[in-house]
Length: 68
Image (tube, rainbow, N blue to C red; front, top):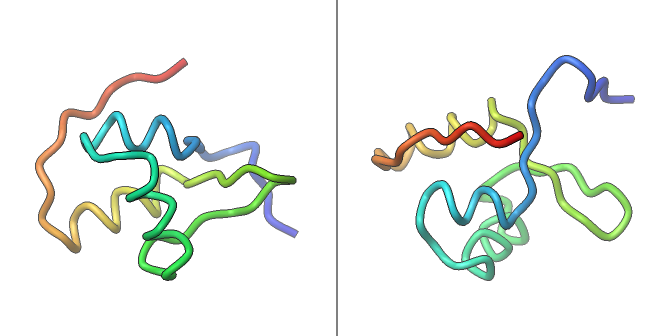
């Protein structure tokens, strides 16, 4: 079982806004196993660690936004 209490997680919408792509693009990356995510019910959650790893791998420049 994964402990989600110590790490920050984002929804697909939040990730799409942060890296300035469409919701569907992020969803397709998840479905293609290019971006690792956890499915919680009907929603996906992307950890900050996995997002940073993905962004660094693809050399993306984006502004990190604080999402509360």
